[in-house]
Length: 340
Image (tube, rainbow, N blue to C red; front, side, top):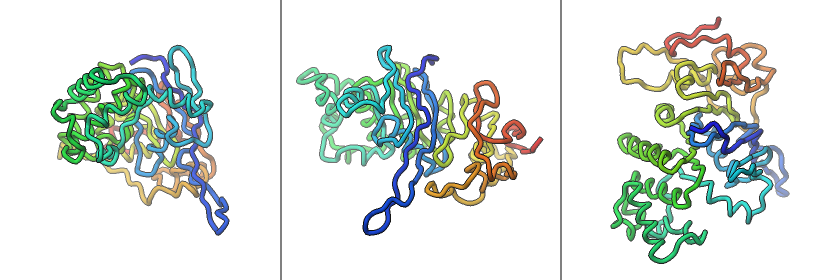
Protein backbone atom coordinates (compact mmCIF):
# COMPACT_ATOMS: atom_id res chain seq x y z
CA UNK A 1 0.00 0.00 0.00
CA UNK A 2 1.23 3.46 -0.99
CA UNK A 3 1.18 6.23 1.63
CA UNK A 4 0.21 8.81 -1.00
CA UNK A 5 -3.44 9.91 -0.83
CA UNK A 6 -5.72 9.08 -3.74
CA UNK A 7 -8.82 10.76 -2.37
CA UNK A 8 -9.40 13.07 0.58
CA UNK A 9 -12.91 13.61 1.91
CA UNK A 10 -13.39 16.56 4.27
CA UNK A 11 -16.56 17.29 6.25
CA UNK A 12 -18.80 15.60 3.67
CA UNK A 13 -22.50 16.21 4.21
CA UNK A 14 -25.47 14.89 2.27
CA UNK A 15 -28.88 16.05 3.47
CA UNK A 16 -32.24 15.14 1.94
CA UNK A 17 -35.06 17.67 2.40
CA UNK A 18 -38.31 16.71 4.13
CA UNK A 19 -41.25 18.42 2.42
CA UNK A 20 -44.80 18.71 3.69
CA UNK A 21 -48.02 20.43 2.78
CA UNK A 22 -49.59 21.40 -0.51
CA UNK A 23 -46.76 23.81 -1.26
CA UNK A 24 -44.14 21.17 -0.44
CA UNK A 25 -42.45 23.39 2.09
CA UNK A 26 -39.14 22.13 3.48
CA UNK A 27 -39.66 21.41 7.18
CA UNK A 28 -36.44 19.56 7.93
CA UNK A 29 -33.66 17.38 6.57
CA UNK A 30 -32.60 13.76 6.76
CA UNK A 31 -28.91 14.01 7.58
CA UNK A 32 -27.76 10.83 5.85
CA UNK A 33 -24.10 11.89 5.88
CA UNK A 34 -23.22 14.47 8.50
CA UNK A 35 -19.60 15.61 8.49
CA UNK A 36 -17.59 12.62 7.27
CA UNK A 37 -13.83 12.99 6.79
CA UNK A 38 -11.26 10.37 5.77
CA UNK A 39 -8.35 9.74 3.41
CA UNK A 40 -8.01 6.90 0.92
CA UNK A 41 -4.40 5.93 0.21
CA UNK A 42 -3.31 4.51 -3.12
CA UNK A 43 -3.52 0.73 -3.27
CA UNK A 44 -5.32 0.27 0.04
CA UNK A 45 -8.70 -1.16 0.93
CA UNK A 46 -10.65 0.96 3.38
CA UNK A 47 -13.57 -0.91 4.91
CA UNK A 48 -16.63 1.19 5.77
CA UNK A 49 -18.90 -0.61 8.23
CA UNK A 50 -21.98 0.02 10.34
CA UNK A 51 -25.62 -0.90 10.82
CA UNK A 52 -28.14 -0.54 8.01
CA UNK A 53 -29.20 3.07 7.63
CA UNK A 54 -26.02 4.60 9.03
CA UNK A 55 -25.08 6.32 5.74
CA UNK A 56 -22.46 4.00 4.24
CA UNK A 57 -23.96 3.77 0.75
CA UNK A 58 -24.81 7.47 0.65
CA UNK A 59 -21.21 8.27 1.57
CA UNK A 60 -19.86 6.11 -1.25
CA UNK A 61 -22.22 7.55 -3.84
CA UNK A 62 -21.73 11.13 -2.66
CA UNK A 63 -17.95 11.01 -2.87
CA UNK A 64 -18.09 10.31 -6.63
CA UNK A 65 -21.21 12.46 -7.11
CA UNK A 66 -23.66 9.74 -8.02
CA UNK A 67 -25.57 11.65 -5.35
CA UNK A 68 -24.79 15.36 -5.15
CA UNK A 69 -23.44 16.17 -1.67
CA UNK A 70 -24.79 19.11 0.30
CA UNK A 71 -21.44 20.33 1.59
CA UNK A 72 -17.83 19.32 2.05
CA UNK A 73 -14.70 18.95 -0.03
CA UNK A 74 -13.71 15.92 -2.14
CA UNK A 75 -10.15 16.01 -3.45
CA UNK A 76 -9.05 13.42 -6.02
CA UNK A 77 -5.34 13.15 -6.77
CA UNK A 78 -4.87 12.32 -10.45
CA UNK A 79 -1.81 12.70 -12.71
CA UNK A 80 -0.05 14.92 -10.21
CA UNK A 81 -3.07 17.19 -9.77
CA UNK A 82 -5.36 17.69 -6.79
CA UNK A 83 -8.85 17.91 -8.31
CA UNK A 84 -11.81 19.23 -6.33
CA UNK A 85 -14.61 16.98 -7.57
CA UNK A 86 -17.36 19.28 -6.32
CA UNK A 87 -16.07 22.12 -8.49
CA UNK A 88 -16.32 20.14 -11.75
CA UNK A 89 -19.16 20.64 -14.21
CA UNK A 90 -21.00 17.65 -15.68
CA UNK A 91 -18.71 17.27 -18.69
CA UNK A 92 -15.51 17.40 -16.65
CA UNK A 93 -16.95 15.01 -14.09
CA UNK A 94 -18.03 12.62 -16.84
CA UNK A 95 -14.50 12.56 -18.26
CA UNK A 96 -13.09 11.76 -14.84
CA UNK A 97 -15.53 8.94 -14.14
CA UNK A 98 -13.20 6.58 -16.00
CA UNK A 99 -11.09 6.67 -12.83
CA UNK A 100 -14.01 6.24 -10.42
CA UNK A 101 -16.08 3.07 -10.72
CA UNK A 102 -18.81 1.47 -8.62
CA UNK A 103 -19.80 -2.14 -7.89
CA UNK A 104 -23.41 -2.28 -6.73
CA UNK A 105 -24.87 -4.45 -4.00
CA UNK A 106 -27.51 -6.29 -6.01
CA UNK A 107 -25.81 -8.16 -8.86
CA UNK A 108 -29.12 -8.60 -10.68
CA UNK A 109 -30.80 -5.20 -10.58
CA UNK A 110 -27.52 -3.49 -11.47
CA UNK A 111 -27.38 -5.35 -14.82
CA UNK A 112 -29.73 -4.49 -17.67
CA UNK A 113 -31.84 -7.65 -18.22
CA UNK A 114 -32.30 -6.77 -21.91
CA UNK A 115 -28.59 -6.61 -22.67
CA UNK A 116 -26.29 -9.60 -23.19
CA UNK A 117 -23.07 -9.80 -21.19
CA UNK A 118 -21.00 -8.53 -24.12
CA UNK A 119 -23.03 -5.31 -24.34
CA UNK A 120 -22.98 -4.78 -20.57
CA UNK A 121 -19.19 -5.00 -20.31
CA UNK A 122 -18.54 -3.26 -23.63
CA UNK A 123 -20.81 -0.28 -22.96
CA UNK A 124 -18.29 1.84 -21.00
CA UNK A 125 -15.62 1.15 -23.63
CA UNK A 126 -17.97 2.26 -26.41
CA UNK A 127 -19.22 5.37 -24.59
CA UNK A 128 -15.67 6.52 -23.87
CA UNK A 129 -14.54 5.63 -27.42
CA UNK A 130 -11.74 3.42 -26.17
CA UNK A 131 -12.22 0.40 -28.43
CA UNK A 132 -14.35 -0.81 -31.31
CA UNK A 133 -14.64 -3.74 -33.71
CA UNK A 134 -12.40 -6.73 -33.12
CA UNK A 135 -10.36 -4.85 -30.50
CA UNK A 136 -13.54 -4.30 -28.47
CA UNK A 137 -14.48 -7.97 -28.69
CA UNK A 138 -10.98 -9.01 -27.60
CA UNK A 139 -10.97 -6.66 -24.62
CA UNK A 140 -14.39 -7.77 -23.41
CA UNK A 141 -13.43 -11.43 -23.80
CA UNK A 142 -10.23 -10.91 -21.81
CA UNK A 143 -12.10 -9.09 -19.05
CA UNK A 144 -14.59 -11.93 -18.79
CA UNK A 145 -11.81 -14.51 -18.58
CA UNK A 146 -10.01 -12.44 -15.94
CA UNK A 147 -13.02 -12.45 -13.62
CA UNK A 148 -13.46 -16.21 -13.96
CA UNK A 149 -16.14 -16.49 -16.67
CA UNK A 150 -16.01 -18.29 -20.02
CA UNK A 151 -16.05 -16.46 -23.38
CA UNK A 152 -19.09 -18.55 -24.33
CA UNK A 153 -21.04 -16.49 -21.77
CA UNK A 154 -20.74 -13.31 -23.85
CA UNK A 155 -24.05 -13.78 -25.66
CA UNK A 156 -26.08 -14.82 -22.63
CA UNK A 157 -28.37 -12.54 -20.62
CA UNK A 158 -28.11 -11.82 -16.86
CA UNK A 159 -31.01 -14.11 -15.90
CA UNK A 160 -28.96 -17.11 -17.10
CA UNK A 161 -26.31 -16.63 -14.39
CA UNK A 162 -26.05 -17.31 -10.68
CA UNK A 163 -25.64 -14.46 -8.19
CA UNK A 164 -21.89 -14.96 -7.98
CA UNK A 165 -21.53 -14.99 -11.76
CA UNK A 166 -23.61 -11.83 -12.08
CA UNK A 167 -21.39 -10.09 -9.57
CA UNK A 168 -18.35 -11.13 -11.60
CA UNK A 169 -19.98 -9.47 -14.62
CA UNK A 170 -20.40 -6.31 -12.55
CA UNK A 171 -16.73 -6.47 -11.56
CA UNK A 172 -15.70 -6.91 -15.21
CA UNK A 173 -17.74 -3.84 -16.15
CA UNK A 174 -16.08 -1.81 -13.38
CA UNK A 175 -12.63 -2.93 -14.58
CA UNK A 176 -13.27 -2.11 -18.24
CA UNK A 177 -11.96 1.46 -17.97
CA UNK A 178 -8.96 0.53 -15.75
CA UNK A 179 -10.00 2.86 -12.90
CA UNK A 180 -7.93 4.06 -9.97
CA UNK A 181 -10.73 3.75 -7.40
CA UNK A 182 -13.54 1.20 -7.10
CA UNK A 183 -16.29 1.66 -4.54
CA UNK A 184 -17.65 -1.78 -3.73
CA UNK A 185 -21.05 -1.42 -2.08
CA UNK A 186 -21.87 -4.64 -0.20
CA UNK A 187 -20.55 -6.66 -3.18
CA UNK A 188 -20.91 -10.07 -1.48
CA UNK A 189 -23.82 -9.60 0.93
CA UNK A 190 -26.30 -11.26 -1.45
CA UNK A 191 -24.07 -14.29 -2.09
CA UNK A 192 -23.60 -17.65 -0.38
CA UNK A 193 -20.67 -17.86 2.02
CA UNK A 194 -18.55 -20.09 -0.24
CA UNK A 195 -19.17 -17.77 -3.19
CA UNK A 196 -18.36 -14.76 -1.01
CA UNK A 197 -14.87 -16.11 -0.41
CA UNK A 198 -14.31 -16.66 -4.14
CA UNK A 199 -15.38 -13.11 -5.01
CA UNK A 200 -13.30 -11.59 -2.22
CA UNK A 201 -10.22 -13.52 -3.33
CA UNK A 202 -10.86 -12.38 -6.90
CA UNK A 203 -11.07 -8.75 -5.79
CA UNK A 204 -7.80 -9.04 -3.89
CA UNK A 205 -6.05 -10.54 -6.94
CA UNK A 206 -7.42 -7.81 -9.19
CA UNK A 207 -6.32 -5.13 -6.76
CA UNK A 208 -2.73 -6.32 -6.95
CA UNK A 209 -2.81 -6.82 -10.70
CA UNK A 210 -4.43 -3.51 -11.65
CA UNK A 211 -3.13 -1.36 -8.75
CA UNK A 212 -6.65 -0.64 -7.53
CA UNK A 213 -7.84 1.25 -4.48
CA UNK A 214 -11.05 0.03 -2.83
CA UNK A 215 -13.64 1.61 -0.60
CA UNK A 216 -15.32 -1.58 0.62
CA UNK A 217 -18.75 -0.94 2.12
CA UNK A 218 -20.19 -3.76 4.24
CA UNK A 219 -22.08 -4.61 7.40
CA UNK A 220 -20.43 -8.04 7.86
CA UNK A 221 -17.41 -7.43 10.09
CA UNK A 222 -15.84 -10.82 9.32
CA UNK A 223 -15.85 -10.01 5.60
CA UNK A 224 -14.32 -6.59 6.23
CA UNK A 225 -11.59 -8.12 8.38
CA UNK A 226 -10.63 -10.45 5.54
CA UNK A 227 -10.13 -7.80 2.86
CA UNK A 228 -9.45 -4.43 4.52
CA UNK A 229 -6.20 -2.66 5.38
CA UNK A 230 -8.01 -0.04 7.46
CA UNK A 231 -11.56 0.09 8.79
CA UNK A 232 -13.83 3.08 9.40
CA UNK A 233 -16.93 2.54 11.54
CA UNK A 234 -20.02 4.68 10.81
CA UNK A 235 -22.94 5.51 13.04
CA UNK A 236 -25.84 7.82 12.13
CA UNK A 237 -24.01 9.60 9.32
CA UNK A 238 -20.66 10.02 11.06
CA UNK A 239 -17.41 8.09 11.31
CA UNK A 240 -16.87 7.23 14.95
CA UNK A 241 -13.70 5.13 14.75
CA UNK A 242 -10.99 4.46 12.17
CA UNK A 243 -7.71 2.58 12.32
CA UNK A 244 -5.86 -0.40 10.85
CA UNK A 245 -8.01 -3.51 10.60
CA UNK A 246 -5.93 -5.63 12.98
CA UNK A 247 -5.90 -2.92 15.65
CA UNK A 248 -9.64 -2.36 15.39
CA UNK A 249 -10.45 -6.04 15.89
CA UNK A 250 -7.91 -6.49 18.68
CA UNK A 251 -8.49 -3.24 20.54
CA UNK A 252 -11.69 -1.31 19.70
CA UNK A 253 -11.85 2.06 21.45
CA UNK A 254 -15.48 3.06 20.83
CA UNK A 255 -18.31 1.24 22.70
CA UNK A 256 -20.32 0.93 19.48
CA UNK A 257 -17.43 -0.80 17.69
CA UNK A 258 -16.91 -3.11 20.67
CA UNK A 259 -20.59 -4.00 20.69
CA UNK A 260 -20.57 -4.80 16.98
CA UNK A 261 -17.52 -7.02 17.38
CA UNK A 262 -18.99 -8.80 20.40
CA UNK A 263 -21.98 -9.79 18.25
CA UNK A 264 -19.86 -11.49 15.57
CA UNK A 265 -20.40 -15.27 15.84
CA UNK A 266 -17.31 -17.41 16.41
CA UNK A 267 -16.76 -21.06 15.55
CA UNK A 268 -15.18 -21.97 18.90
CA UNK A 269 -17.87 -23.13 21.39
CA UNK A 270 -15.41 -22.59 24.25
CA UNK A 271 -15.01 -18.90 23.43
CA UNK A 272 -16.75 -17.28 26.39
CA UNK A 273 -17.26 -13.96 24.66
CA UNK A 274 -19.44 -11.52 26.56
CA UNK A 275 -22.10 -9.82 24.47
CA UNK A 276 -22.12 -6.06 24.92
CA UNK A 277 -25.80 -5.06 24.80
CA UNK A 278 -27.09 -2.29 22.55
CA UNK A 279 -30.71 -1.51 23.27
CA UNK A 280 -33.11 0.21 20.93
CA UNK A 281 -32.80 1.16 17.27
CA UNK A 282 -30.70 3.64 15.37
CA UNK A 283 -32.21 7.11 15.97
CA UNK A 284 -34.00 8.97 13.20
CA UNK A 285 -31.36 10.82 11.11
CA UNK A 286 -33.91 13.64 10.71
CA UNK A 287 -34.04 14.05 14.49
CA UNK A 288 -30.67 13.03 15.88
CA UNK A 289 -30.18 13.18 19.65
CA UNK A 290 -28.06 15.99 21.14
CA UNK A 291 -24.52 15.36 22.30
CA UNK A 292 -23.04 12.02 21.30
CA UNK A 293 -25.42 10.43 18.79
CA UNK A 294 -24.76 7.00 20.30
CA UNK A 295 -25.54 8.00 23.89
CA UNK A 296 -29.20 6.74 23.99
CA UNK A 297 -27.93 3.20 23.31
CA UNK A 298 -24.50 3.27 24.96
CA UNK A 299 -24.03 1.07 28.07
CA UNK A 300 -21.33 3.47 29.34
CA UNK A 301 -23.26 6.74 28.91
CA UNK A 302 -22.45 9.62 31.26
CA UNK A 303 -23.86 13.15 31.64
CA UNK A 304 -21.26 14.70 29.33
CA UNK A 305 -22.34 12.37 26.52
CA UNK A 306 -25.91 13.71 26.61
CA UNK A 307 -24.94 17.34 26.00
CA UNK A 308 -21.53 17.52 24.31
CA UNK A 309 -20.79 15.99 20.91
CA UNK A 310 -17.37 14.27 20.87
CA UNK A 311 -14.90 15.03 18.08
CA UNK A 312 -13.14 12.32 16.11
CA UNK A 313 -9.70 12.47 17.74
CA UNK A 314 -6.53 10.43 17.80
CA UNK A 315 -6.55 8.30 20.93
CA UNK A 316 -3.50 6.23 19.99
CA UNK A 317 -1.04 6.57 17.14
CA UNK A 318 -3.05 5.99 13.96
CA UNK A 319 -6.22 5.13 15.91
CA UNK A 320 -9.04 7.68 16.00
CA UNK A 321 -12.33 7.52 17.88
CA UNK A 322 -15.14 9.94 18.72
CA UNK A 323 -15.87 9.07 22.33
CA UNK A 324 -15.36 11.27 25.39
CA UNK A 325 -14.11 8.31 27.40
CA UNK A 326 -12.33 6.26 24.73
CA UNK A 327 -9.08 6.37 26.68
CA UNK A 328 -10.84 5.15 29.82
CA UNK A 329 -12.49 2.04 28.39
CA UNK A 330 -10.55 -1.23 28.53
CA UNK A 331 -11.72 -4.01 26.23
CA UNK A 332 -9.82 -7.26 26.70
CA UNK A 333 -10.59 -9.11 23.45
CA UNK A 334 -14.29 -8.50 24.18
CA UNK A 335 -14.30 -11.11 26.96
CA UNK A 336 -14.63 -8.52 29.68
CA UNK A 337 -15.56 -4.86 29.68
CA UNK A 338 -14.65 -2.48 32.43
CA UNK A 339 -14.33 1.26 32.98
CA UNK A 340 -11.00 2.29 34.44
